[in-house]
Image (cartoon, rainbow, N blue to C red):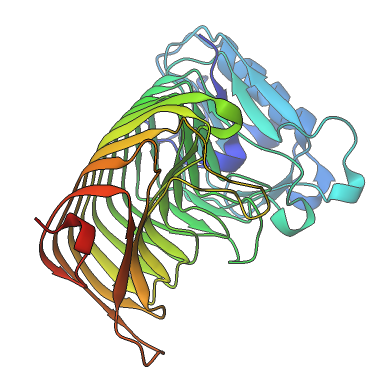
Amino acid sequence: MICLLSIVQVGGILGSRKLLDDDDDSVFDVMDFGAVGDGETDDTKAFLDAWEKTCEATADSPTMVIPEGKTFLLYRLSFDGPCKSGNPSVQVSGDIIAPTKSSWDGDKDYWIQFSDVNGLSIDGSGSIDGQGSDWWDEKALRLSQCDGVNIRGLKHVNSQRNHISITGCGNVNISSITIDAPMDSPNTDGIDISHSTNVLIEDSTIGTGDDCVAINGGCFDININNVACGPGHGISIGSLGADGETEEVERVHVRNCNFTDTSNGARIKTWQGGSGHAKNISFEQINLIRVRNPIVIDQYYCNGDHDCGEHKSAVKVSDVVFSGFQGTSPDAVVISLNCSKTVPCTNIVMNQIDIETIETEDEASSYCLNALGEESDTSPKVPCLQQ
């Protein structure tokens, strides 16, 4: 199994927090390998040399140290395994910055990656700056085909694209992270998940220019708890079924989350012409502050500039619960269930919903097309769900 783990995305994977002894032959400080740490000198080779020694060490948890008080400029590099130790670690106490776009030479598919490294932990209080405003729309970063990963304590700013991408992974825990990018930064999802199982995201703050969390096809057992989202596009399932693809998402549960000044809150979006299903999904105990589209199911998603007419096939959306929503929206339509004529949404349940409009004279209202289910204690009312 190969693990591609970009440090620009991760910045802090929970590992064993041990006191480091400068004389310990299991500790490899990048400064001892020629790093300068002035933010201007290319320290890429020093990092690779320090990693080589860390990966070759046979100690229980050999540690590569990135010391505090320094800023390290790194170009594209790959930390490769497998390593002799089953638990190599990287302590990130200093700051890491990406090069400017104009000084980059070569492929742009990743900045920094870990490949084929099992049991890896990355921890520390340093910052990781992707210099995103110079790179947006240029490259994606990822954690791929990894199992049993813990990410904790990340402070990440201005990713070049997705801050954390999780693809083909299992048993991933992410907690106590902070992601910060401007609201107008394009395609900078906070956490983007696809083809992964058993992912937990909790106790984190995400503000970005796209989805705070995006859950794509092939995802099962995704749990999101106590996440503050804003700015951004909310927490989204999809889009699913683009280009006629068959995609499945099951058992996604979002609880105790806050949305502030986001364009969406809880959203499920699918393309016409696709197939598969999104089911057994819940959004519960959600607080909304000035959220434009608090609750959305859109089976006619078109990404803004495509002809999304009626098709005979569509991704089936069913068994979805929205419960315990309260807060405000600047728009009048605060609940929108725009479901397919040929493959309607079924078993949509709403209860304990109280969303008010602000900045408009209109009262809060709902839009409902081809959705079946039930509601109780919901304001505004959703007529097509009333029994």
